[in-house]
Length: 473
Image (cartoon, rainbow, N blue to C red; front, side, top):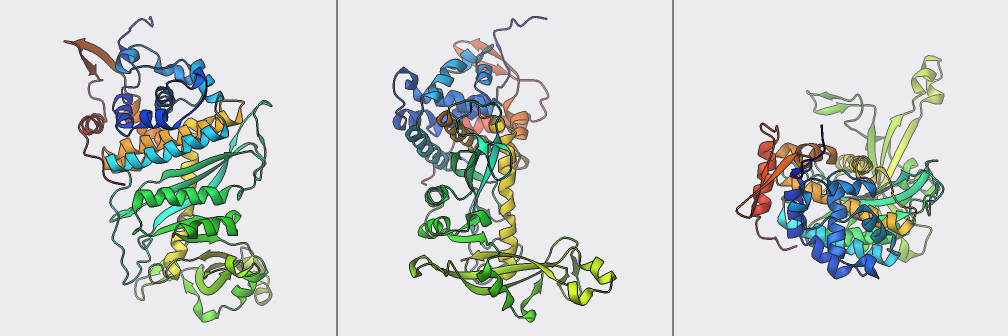
């Protein structure tokens, strides 16, 4: 056994994926918008492309970037920087440079959407009524944060937050677009790294504003957008930022006095049973036999604030029996202890597009953002590799770029890969071994015979080699 073949590469899928990144202008955007000083910031486009390429291939630390410098990689790609050079580049970042990288990520996503089927085809809006099994034609913009666990005492900004885990806090916004068969796989439209002890709503106003602006540039002014958030973001800043971008909101509310008072005024006849855990559909009546019920009532959010801050909308409430109700009923205390548990959210959606039942079901779909968190943490965000906070903030943005690029590449292949996780896409399309051969100054990749996903890989390669013209954003 010997490591002596100069013509082998371990990730041949990087060839079409980085070709797609180049056509979307990743390197040019970095050269144009990044102003990292000194020699550390030289050739920013190549360095950003190297970092993103390494992440697409599975790198989750700076040292892992060495996987771009083996065998025939130097013959396939123009230049791959050493991990030490890339580490120095990241450590030269300041907060301003991270914001420049945010702008690059936004522009790059828009370019990708124009070259691929990343956002699918928008479904037409049906103003005549709402389908309980649909989102009513709203593009779904989800906002949530997650803790990225870190170890050691040299990490700037690391701390213990609401989860009790020592780490840094990443705030993300994802976008999924409706089409005829459902919604597209979510892409990330905004991101921000914060210190570990930061509360969830910190900086949410700016991030929601950025996310809605990017969504508008992607989808145009005619598309309905719904910003979904949990109760940590129920505040004037995030809600007004969404409304300022002409988006509707659907945000879980805390059970404060005003909310409890509003729930108490709901008439018993207003409750509708819904599809929920252990629900059964009565085919004779077409109604659900369920322990969960929903109702709504007009509600003004932030009513204790000045009039300009108040937001009129609907309070949608879901109730389920208390878990202890059956036990108390068996003890003969059913009248005293037959109580409900209430879950309420505030929404400004059009009731003609999303009725009470559809609004509740759509809001519950907010949990899909947790899958994006898990996806990132199983790939490039398995670690935050630097002790410098700004470097880690830049790493987060680069991880988002790699995530969206991987998703865009998958959208050019077979339907079963469109919504696959990053790990699945990497296994089937990226980490494909190959041998590099040269004949008449032309490079040929010899890939494994009977590779199970050969059709998908070939489809990606052919479409990137001769892509359609970029669509206007």
